[in-house]
Length: 334
Image (cartoon, rainbow, N blue to C red; front, side, top):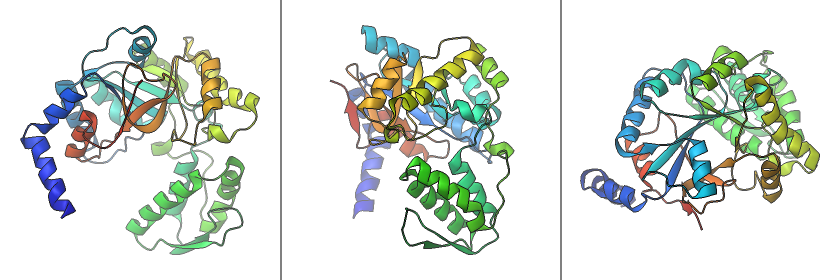
């Protein structure tokens, strides 16, 4: 029955003009899209281009700086305004996606993990994925919390490996930083797989010369901390400032231009709190984005902005509905 109801609603939205009505209803809100990865898989560029065709037809693309001015000064944004952001600083954006962004004239804000670009670390979730995919084992046991009994994971098929990768990543996000570091140290032995010192090409970061060129080409560059920790779990305020302000300072050193926009790592409620918001303000950012779902209005807190998760592989109908505001969500405003 639920499937039938969903099918009817979707037909009304896409063929009965309902999507136009939803867009009109939410015309005074602004959306911020959140992309992460652009894997070099067949059809990725074509799917991304399809999304951008839809955006350019029905929305007015703005920058995070325009949103900051709108929130600070009350200057108007166009109806159905939309900004595009990308997290982390992976090189796959430059190699696989940037030509599509340029072709469709889509401005973007790129949030960088400065330690990642400095090659002092590589993203732990990529390490988890690589280790599980490279393991020759058919199963392994892993404790997902301190003192817990190890859980058996079966990875006999590619589909099972993908499911286990997603599950382990989600569970490890819940761990304290020191607990996750300990588990990451043990994981190669558990999986009987070797972790290379540097990430493979499809997981490597942009280098600073590429970032400087992107900045010259008009890409807005934002900060995403030094090491991508869960900020709400850092109890020492100086350490908090070092993660947030240190990232800003390092990027500014490389670009020789102010960095005004920040992105909370992980970004869900509980991953940031009022103290982390205060630290972001103290570091003199103009905006900060979360990973909480929703649209924003003029009364939104500039340091708790909602976003819509986007991905080139999303079903076309879902992508269009999400941008319009057809899915259950928060509208953050006054």
